[in-house]
Amino acid sequence: MDLKVGLVLLVLGVPFALLTNLLSPDDSQGAAGPQRGEAKPSAVAPLSPAPSASSGGGAHATTRPPEPPPVEAAAPTTAAPRDRPPDPLPSDERSTEPAARPRLQYLSTLEPIGGLGNWKRTGSVDMGGRTYGNSIVFASSQSPSKRMTLTYNIPAGMRHFKVAAGLDDRSPDGNAVFFQIDCDGTPVDSGFTLRVGEERSIDLSVAGARRLTIEAEVTLRPFETTNAPLRTVWGDARFTVD
Image 1 (cartoon, rainbow, N blue to C red):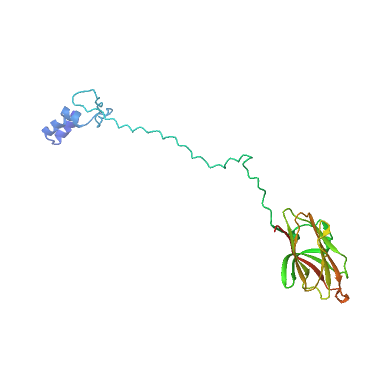
Image 2: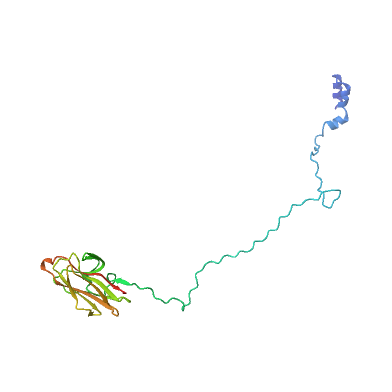
């Protein structure tokens, strides 16, 4: 403390002992704290170097973290074999059987190779109170008419020709029709004549024949029935294996 300040304090009645403490060197240096411009001492103690594993005096060795266990390499996986189509059979082991042939073919599903197609229609017709769903029908408006014919190739393997012949139920009474069947141009018999309400079932062997012709001719048609429809029916005409 400055001397002048001390005198002023003494005049003011400050006790001398207290004034002496204020003017002591220790108070001016220690209690006042560090002078301006001096660095404050660090409150953190300096770090001491870590003791090494070889140093004595009871120093503890540095503990290393445990090493992870070695990772075993995964065993290679083998992809499952994919299914594949079987190898083709040698030519001598392949089936040589031909594709199965139909055992029945209606004439309504075949195309005629000869005859007057304009006389023909196909489909369902009623005859004798029964419906024949796959029929060949000749329609005639002439009195009497000329002969109406249709010729078909006989499919391979077919051995029989089956049909129900007659006039449909809508034909007028008093009319008559002559029926004839040929195989390879030769009549199979002398033919037959049917009237409305009459019917004949035929089962004809065609084994060995190549072509079949069906024929019909109106032989009797009263004048008063000329304008009425007259239909000659080959009911469910078909080739069969047996």
